[in-house]
Structure formats: C-alpha cells, structure tokens
Image (cartoon, rainbow, N blue to C red; front, side, top):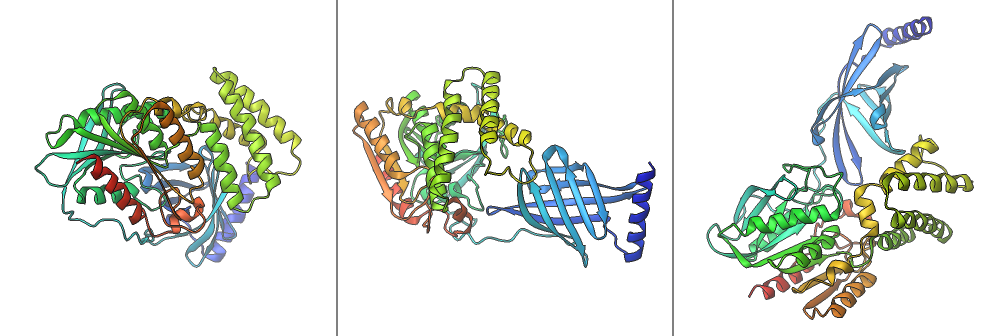
Length: 465
C-alpha cells in the first residue's frame, strides 16, 4: 500500500501543478483498412486513481469496463485486458494524441472532448432514396435450425410477377448490403437489377444486423440452409415467378450457391461472382502467394509461409477430433517457431498468445470446413444454367485457375449451359483497380464495375425471357 500511496502522491502533484484534467468523455474514430469505428472513453476520478469504461457505438457495445487507467506526466493509458486492447496517448491542449493496439496491430487514433463524426466517404454508386421501385423489409425463418433472419426484398413494381435473385454474401459476418470497407456492393447490385426488371432478395447473415443465430459456430453448409430458407420464403410471395428463382453468390457465397442449387429444384440459375472452384486449402495457399508477391514480399519468405501453412492445412485435412487437432497444431507451431530464429512475433504478443490465437483461427468450425471442402462435390450436381465471372486482377480467387476449374468440373459433369467471363482490370470486389491488392479496396470510390453489372444483367435477362 505504501508504494501505491507514493505513486498517487506523485500523480496528484503533477495533476495540480499543470492543471490537467482527463475526467469526462473522450471521443475518437478508429480507422482500419477503410472501416471507421467510433470509440468513446468515459473517465472518472476516485480516491485511489482513475476508472474508465469504453463504448463502441457502431457495434452496439456500451459500458465496456477498462481494466486499467493510468495518467501521469500528460501520458494516459487505457487497457481492456480480455479484449487485448491497449491505448497509449499524450494529452496536448485538450486533445489526446495516441495509438490503439489490439492483437499485435497498431493504429493511430486521437481522442477529443468534441463529438467526432466519421469521415464521409464518397461512394457515387450508392442509390439515394426515394427509389423508383418497391422495397420491403421482411423476416423469414430457417426452420431447419430455428433461426429468424431479416432482409430486404426489392421489386420493380409493387404489383406484378417478377424473376428474382437471392444475393449470398462472402466470408465473414456481413449485413444485407454486404457492407465492407465503406462499400455496399449488394445495395448497388440490388438497385441496378431491380431497375432492370429483376426482383432482388438480400438479407443479414445470421447473427448480424436484424438476423438471429450464431455466426461464429456456423460453416458454409450451415449458411446454405439459410439460402434454402430464403428460397422457400420467396415461393410464398405472389409477386415472384416460382420458376425463375436464381442465386448470385460472391466469393464464399459463390461456394454456397452450387450447394443450394444441387439440392433444390427450385433454383433456376446461378451466378458465381469470384465463387471458388478450387478446394479451400489449395485456394488459401494460392491466395496467400499472390497477395504476398504483389505486396513485394521476397520469394524466400513466400516459400517459407506456403510451406508452413501447407503443413498446418494438412493437419486439418487429416483431423477428425477437435481436441487432437488443437494439440497437433500447437505442437507444430511451437516447433516451427523454435526453428525460426529470424521472424519476430507480433508486437506485444508472447509466443503462447500467438500460438493460441493461430490455433483458434485455424481450428474454428468455419475454417476447418473451408480448408477441407472441395467445390467440385456440389458443382458436379448442378444442372441449371451457370454464369461464373472473375476480375482479371483478383488476388483472392485467381481468375484463370478458378474459371478453368469450374469449366472442367461442369463440362465433365455434362452441364452444357455454362458461361464464363473474365473482366479486365477488376479485383475481387469487381472494382476497377491498379494492383488488385485488398489494401486498395477502401480507397477506390467505385463499388462495383458498371461494365460487370451490365454484362451480368444481360445474362440474367436472357435466362428470364
């Protein structure tokens, strides 16, 4: 207690000498890869020091306890230990200039007593209300897993009978607009198609937005049941042509679309927007190689990473027990780290923390399923018309290898109604780009290439004559 008292006394002298007061509300915006997240710290003074809470308004989280708050000689530090968050800053003229750290990554973030709004990003393709078509927010049930899901149905007109497409999002928790890095691709696609006479149904992933359920424990196969439920819902709508229900899947959504089409006779056509035709583990290795090379990583480092991940993925492919899998991955990672005298662990992480984080990522239900899954299994059973498209500069689902794989699978299975397109100069999000690297996505104003929208719409209208 004596040591605490001395430290507190030193602090109080500093506090009164310089008249610095950090109590109250501090606001900031965390910017990560084009995403903006507002954070608010509430600081209060007690007899033994400072206590704080943190809000994340954009995530609907308020009153998060800050484990430790210290302030001395103008330096402030917030720690949220269970989330591995640390903020270090310096108070200068009623503003705190500092750095936000989490999971070994660091991002500059300043705090102010003033309300801070997100920077408005120019997204010229986003439609502005009122829309020249009918839009309805609805809920529907996944009766297989007893989950309530929420989405939006847009119709060219309120009355009539229309063909419809269901939009299936890519990997990671996405809302009905597939909102990512300041872009809303599904909002742009839905608007364009609806204006061209095609109804569109898009929905929040389970556990996201207004949809219920647990996203973290779900695999691609589970998400496929959500799509099947969406098909069943659309069959109840009088405005929908029951013989013209199609699917448009982006990235992982393009993996899920064939799953659903292979099981449901109600699916009349599918569009694969950079939908994988290569086994998951092989695709991830190819993706890592292409992104690393485009980023300027040395060939020696690329080869080392591919070798490491190949070993880890092979362990996953052979595993049938989660506990044994985690043990095997832990042993392999510790062995690899012990032999690597050059590479460094992410800043602020111990070896145990790093290994645990990696093991939890690789052994998650979704990742295990994705690594093992071969899209050929479902594609062979798809008999309806298929449009498969890729961007020429897609580094996440490389076009030549991917489209060739899809062509060969469907051709060998006897499906003669396949169209493939490779759009020049487009990336994984179908934006006109420079390098195709994911780091470009947020800085590009365009959300989805007008040329790609036009060609996809032409194909859809042909299917729905």
